[in-house]
Amino acid sequence: MKQEADRRKLTAKIEEIIRKEIEAERKRAEEAARKTAAASGTATSAPKTESSGSVAKTTSKTLELAPETKLANADFEKNKGALPWPVSAGIITTHFGRQPHPSLAGIEVNNNGLDFTTEKDASVLAVFAGTVTSVFSIPGAGTNIIVTHGTYKTVYSGLASVSVKVGDKVSTKQKLGTVMYDGEENTLHFEVWKINSDYRDWE
Image (cartoon, rainbow, N blue to C red; front, side):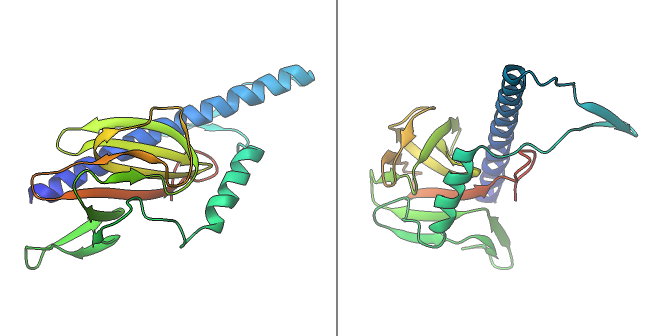
């Protein structure tokens, strides 16, 4: 069950990184709103905090998506079901969702994305134009890249080498790095996330 434990570890790390990205995006949006309000002479007040039991929550207006974010979302959504593969050749060895374990009878595994098994030193390709927002390593899972496309994020896990850095603008099918050999095969794990519009959670 080591494979399943490694997958849970990977999922937890991806969720942690995306939460950090969401919080950073929220802070940038709030700061931009404050600057806009100050420039227009509109007074702003600190958001009101309500306490419910032991948990405090902040009430404020839902942040509106910037025009460029809306445009990026529309472009990404138009390609739903038609995005290219993140590798130029290979086979899908694990599909999305719950499914029988490949070698243990009666055991199910849950996959948050797709696994592509490919050839040695295969290039990992961006499936859509966007901005690299995270590059991080996980022991045993290689290097991982998150590319942001508006409120969508694509995750590429299991890279041996990386050709991009945080902040880089990438185009569709641009090389991000190469797939790692895990001792048995060369497999890229790929996920797509959609962030809810209030930046506090994802679907």
